[in-house]
Image 1 (cartoon, protein in one colour):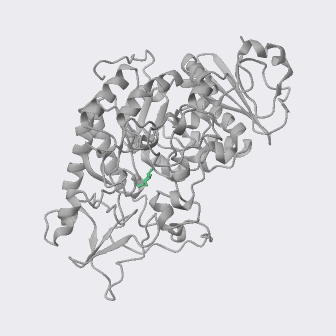
Image 2 (cartoon, rainbow, N blue to C red; image 1 turned 90 degrees about the horizontal axis):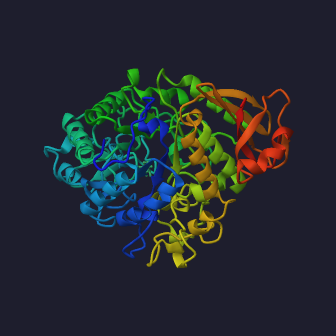
Image 3 (tube, rainbow, N blue to C red; image 1 turned 90 degrees about the vertical axis):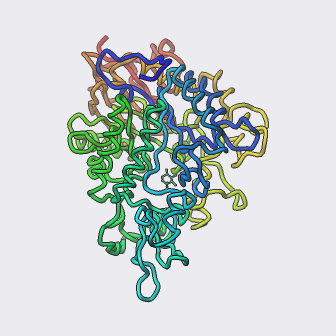
Length: 540
Ligand code: NOJ
């Protein structure tokens, strides 16, 4: 347990990360304090009160390590140093202490698949074929005609192989050429990377979100990937091939187990894995006998059609697929995917919040979701994301979802006194300060939901019971120790009636009204207003 801690042990034996709610911070866009237009660690420290008021339990920071910033921190040049853009190690120490003092756990990002091409390991590796670190990365000879060793493609477009003139070989990169892949079959790489985890754990960090884990290893025989017959114009060029030999290789699970063992050396720490995979394949990331990730991120709410049938099936399939004792988790968005309020519209984004915060399992909120932030249009001359630069015009760019938080009505939203690195949307989303005092705001809804979730073990720990759905409404229960909560979500824009067979419930929270008292009169009428979600207690 971290020093200076406000954390309580749960009497029920549930781990903090099971009952807790995680909040993802994209540090570049949270709060700037030095006027360079880019968020920093001191900025996060000054905004912790927002997170405490919101009612989350842990923050996960996207990478803050020394980086060449070709992929905005996901190209690490020194795993054990803070990038000066974000601050210093002292700033980090202060932020960690302040977070723990406020009862917030702190989770960092771990990027094991690749480093920056400016990392000293890679500079050494590329210096000569006989470098002791040559095999820390993946080097291959050209084909006889000089072409890359095989057909593997980069997630960000083009070949996944870049040629190094000086040493006459290609190196492999699942992402940018500035992000060479580490060779996880090399024992020294494993040791060095596991020691990175130890470095931060011993400083009191509570967990890691592990980046791009399904890319960690590739086929030993370097076989070509097969062509994807389902690829269509407009899709990412990387999808032209089925990534059979470059993703989700069986050996990845040994590496994950080794990471998990390091976490377990420190006790009570959390390991989350980022893997975009179908449910059946995702389950393997819990590891044999749960020796893998505590939480392999479940991104399926991002890609599943937004209607009651599809969502009910998703929940059923996911719950059924979980390994015994495996803890579920849910996500609506992140710094790589279109924002939920843009995908579903502002009204249904409120229903999505109710779903996220009432399903069984750990929810992760992406910064700005709580205020209903939308994707912000980015003009061509404002583009920052290397993916958009590499394959422009396909809508793959991630800048729209990474724009800074609007905190106040000041110029540039109180985010910076300088020129923000991406434009700030001051029109579509009301800033935090205004939403704070508006009981009908998205922020108020999130606060009420998080308060209820904290007060009701049925929501944080109870079982999930599928109840009923039609084309417009989804109803389920959460049950704990005899307590039954009914969640009814109207996913349509018209009034809906609940069927007579459902048990009556007394409303505890409605997305459409401010408190339960206001609701009493309509409790019995079983009507849901357009886009209304309601949580009620049954049988009391
Ligand atoms: C996944 C991260 O979330 C994304 O932002 C990054 O570009 C890639 N992995 C490469 O690290």
